[in-house]
Length: 164
Image (tube, rainbow, N blue to C red):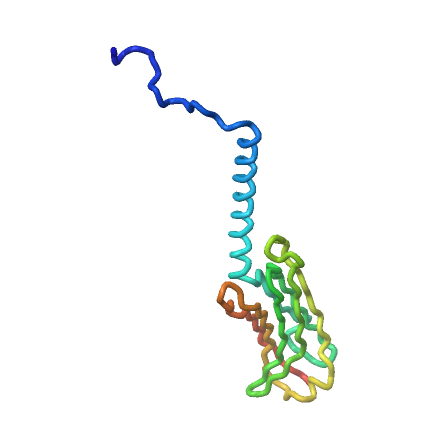
């Protein structure tokens, strides 16, 4: 045989092609597996990092009875997240508020984040248990164990001045 001839080698083309229904089933299976792979990778990231952001703000830096404290949290909603607001002065600490942010109903498949905010008005009874002077506000967001790992809590602190 002449090596320069235009004949096709014996095994370049398939002799038996898949029937159209079988080819359709194979293609559909590939698309579904690819979609679940992308969803699974996204869900794995959301299980690893459960809290997207956490903010702590006050109406003023000198807090007294009636001052407002605002917290905002955005979670990936893969698991429930607990948000705890504390007032700390020296060795004295009090929880001002504890709030839970729920997960999504279909948490593995639903990538939508959850937003939650809390506006806390400082009551005079709490201010009376502290002394006048410098203190700290701390907000902590704690997730749940996922993938055999408990993510570290996300903490925000704010230095304030207490005034009775």
